[in-house]
Image 1 (cartoon, rainbow, N blue to C red):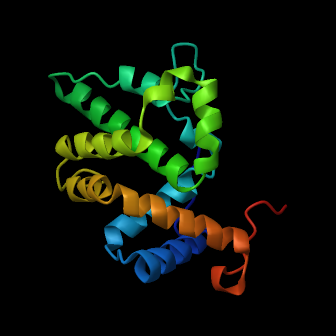
Image 2 (image 1 turned 180 degrees about the vertical axis):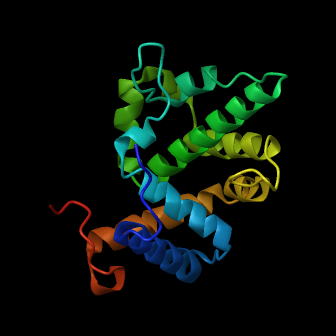
Length: 182
């Protein structure tokens, strides 16, 4: 699956929404953090990106509990990178659902009973922090950005909720981009 290029109108539209909501209403202006959130929204337009992880039968893993079972810490570099990637995805997954579509969490938890006891806020913060600890300033994303996502997880959830409200209002401030038009 191909990534949405930064020059694509959808990516630019999300960038404008994220910048406006986070800088004006949330008070967060770190460029790397805002770029990360824009990329997350753009990537997760493709449902395949949300359920990036698969089980042994190639079925998408749709619950955090199952993702956590795949995130065992190893001692070699390959295992460390795998663990970093899994925890980053858990952070992204929990941030997306709690921020953009919180009303779906109850339905998701009923469908995947394993997640019934998992607090998505706590797990998202924890997973981003683990990914940050396994990152450096040379990794993509860098350790500082992942640590900030952990530290400001609640603010990011709130800001993504504002972004959704803006895109749903479809007013002139959002550029009027309709995600669901043909």
